[in-house]
Length: 637
Image 1 (cartoon, helix red, strand yellow):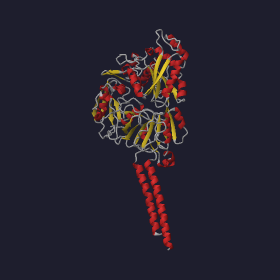
Image 2 (image 1 turned 180 degrees about the horizontal axis):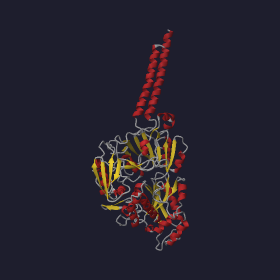
Image 3 (image 1 turned 30 degrees about the vertical axis):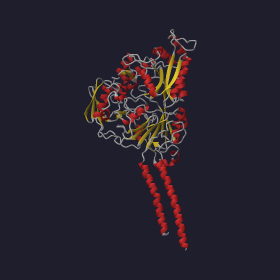
């Protein structure tokens, strides 16, 4: 081989290797981004004000609790605290923090932060809205030393080893007073991320579009495979489905039934139907009032009559709603603790079935005969005509669809219903003011029943402060002194079997009083790109959801698929919309801005690099051919 050929071959080898070396370096330097599609936006990033499921997912990512629920079975495992114990006299609980922990800004996490968080809730008013049930019976929290916090309680408390209270950084929150906290946004920016102690912290939020999180470099769990998480909002269920098909997102949560079914059978997509830790209900305004009993709102007073509410509960075919709205992906609803928690769930005695004849008989007996217009009314002409509000921003279309079924069923027994769709933010304000008759919504239920049961106590009705009325946890305004007594008993009962009896008695009371008409327990419908990420963890094991858990288990383990798998599925990974700035799926109204991040699949930079490498190779081949031709001509001479 001539020297010029040797030189050309060496040059070709170097030229080919350099672009690919750069590609490997570039791919390694680019962040691994997990993009999740959701059907609702963040209502608040402030743990004292946020109520939506996406808000609680945000809090869980940013602010760990002292202990947490295990992924497999909801058992109690360490969180910020590595151990804890109750005193022999049952008056104190002591928690020992993990050593060496830091907030995301580098400030050490100490017992002062824990004591501050609990004392702020104990002393506060507005702060009790989301966390009051956990601090009931607490006297004071004290930092014994940097890693030890002691909480004094006035009576035994069965939830002290699983307090679902997000621990906040004292050096950030102590400057925000009790009035300012109501409007404190707590939104992170690229220049000033949220200060947290969880695996991720917020760095960007664009209302109606997306929320972006970056890995917390100081998280005690260590560096995770995913560098950024993006929750992208889709107002259109079909657009959410198209986004997972195209690769614009890596996981879709809260899928509409039709979309979910359309994804089944696609090799690159895995669908998941999970047992629900939630219920959906039609809530009745049982008599809106403040916690002190002062009446508020404009609710139809006829719903104060338990007989009317019970009659309405007999009028609805819940199984038909499950079949037609959920496509069988769920169960008819009964009581406020879902069957996912069998130790607490009550199968009620004498359950309401679908019996419109009985419903009509109950209304006749209550003094509401059917009028000439087909609507029942009492002797004074007060008609059984109610407003039913449904959520326009529910993650799927089930809120509206189920409300339409309820409207039709009520019409069959002579009850008129006017439907109106409102946003969840608007609904929260309307309900807090008592300006409603009925509404459709849902609750996510914690593994321990205490929090859910607390929402029906008299003390959790709305309250007045500074001339303004503020919503609390109670949305039906149910107030029953007998129920409150049972709540206090279970909240002080540490014997499991004894507490179980009390809890189920409370569920039966709520059911008999028809506070809610629980329509169904809807399965959680999710789908993910199996060619993009792996390692998803269900809670509970085998039957649970992948995200929106009581913990951060999936975010702890999820990782990009191996390089070999990526190469095999390159065509699927590079589908339209999977690039650095994901394109909007058809029908998505949120394409105005996109998070500045790369996707979990093959990145735009990598694709450009490959094209450059191919171009370099083509040019070099042409040059070598020319050099070969020149050498041949010289040899001939």
